[in-house]
Every structure is written in structure tokens, then in C-alpha cells.
View 1 (cartoon, helix red, strand yellow):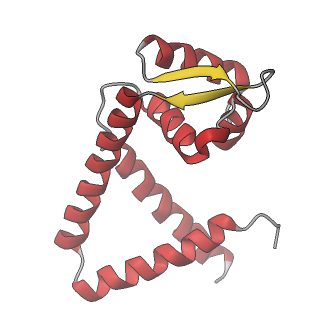
View 2: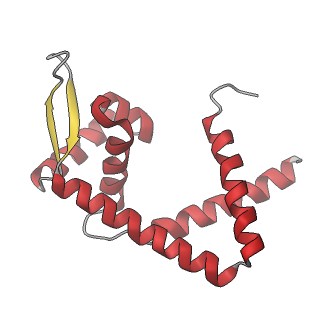
Length: 143
């Protein structure tokens, strides 16, 4: 792969990423859905700093989003049971339901798009490419 190929690949990934973002439920702004997703990914260790780092977001911006999510009863910020000086963010049942609905909408769109636009062989290639893309995403060292 050369630089031109890499650019074309990156643009394709970003176009699909933008298209998937269009499929979110819309009950809350997308940036709040992204926070819910990051909290879910981190699980019991979802401290504000970890979530802000995950989203590459300023801590002050995350704090404002967390206040809105708490007001809507979608998250709770509670003391860490292991270290009372730390706080952790916990999804409420309503927050989890909203996040799952949002993910289901986007995944349903993706299934419809793949079955409509791709052949079964191309769909298999896409799944294989997804596994390779995950390996690239998991790289933490600079090659």
C-alpha cells in the first residue's frame, strides 16, 4: 500500500463512519451518545479522565456533557468503591437502553446496506477486512 492508496482507504473509512453517524436515534445529541458508548466500553473503570481520553475530549467539555446526561438520568457519577477519591461514571438503565437502541439502528442500517449493495462474497470480504481494520486500530506502537 502506498500513500495514495492509504489516503483513498482512509477517505472510504471516514465516509462510512459519517454515514453510520447519521443513523443515530436522535433523542440526544450524537456527542452525548458517544459519551454513553465510551462509558459502556470502559465498564466499571469508566472514570471521567479515561472517558475524556478515549474520546480525545477536553475534561471540561466532558464535564458539561456529563451534567446533561445526569440531568436526563442517563448516567450517574458515583464515588469509586475501591478508591473514594475517584469518581466513576455508570450508565443507568435508561442510558443503556438508549445506547442499545442507537447501536441497533446503526447496525440495522449496516445490514440493510450490505445486503442491498454487496454480493454475498463481497460481504464476506468486508467482514474479513473488518478484522484487519480492528488489528490496525489496536496498534499502540508507531510502526
